[in-house]
Length: 157
Image (cartoon, rainbow, N blue to C red; front, top):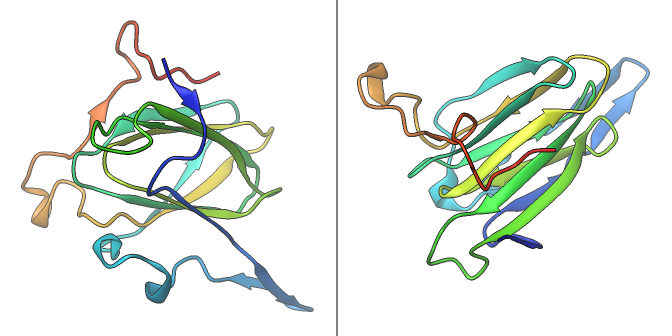
């Protein structure tokens, strides 16, 4: 049903720590490195316990910019559900996090999920280009959830 391969519009960008004797810092987001339509409007960080899966879900309008910096590693799953995309029905999987620090831009219409594959809780930073539930949390949430759908084609191993 899905073909393995890169997905049009999904951007992986390596994250580089700059360190000295005090520790390190890492630029997660730079406006000059994002397409204009993916400008950020909010940010949050989540903690995911070992073995836990978040998703799969998708957004009709929202793009997500995730930063996986550790601790721990995640397996991220992406499925192109955009019928007008040149990579429609492609599936892309990668390991990101402590061992492979990446920012991952997920456009609207790309179904996504991630699993914490480490034995420690992991942190994920997200900077979407739409407000959750709209201005003042007064609008419907832009999210189509697939995790509890019988016979979903979006399977996470």
